[in-house]
Length: 98
Figure 1 (cartoon, helix red, strand yellow):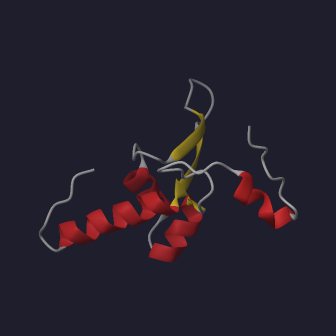
Figure 2 (cartoon, one colour; figure 1 turned 180 degrees about the vertical axis):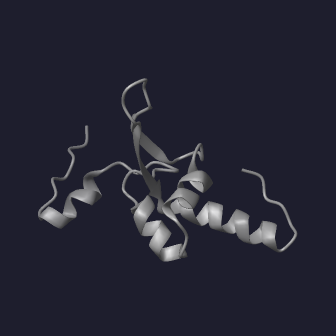
């Protein structure tokens, strides 16, 4: 039986996390406002571009009869790269599937 080595420093906690293929929880996540500033687009355009995109984290509540809905989005860097690549290839005349 192997014993797990304990991390020695605060910044070393990452080494104790088991790695998984496709793990996005530890990568950088952008807010809608950050991407809007980076890409020089409106927040509404960013929301439309990433709504329903696999890997995007959305939480909040939808609109009800008396209250406006608030949805917060966090977009992992890998999703940003995937969408950018897809948009770039579409503008060049080739298509890339989701």
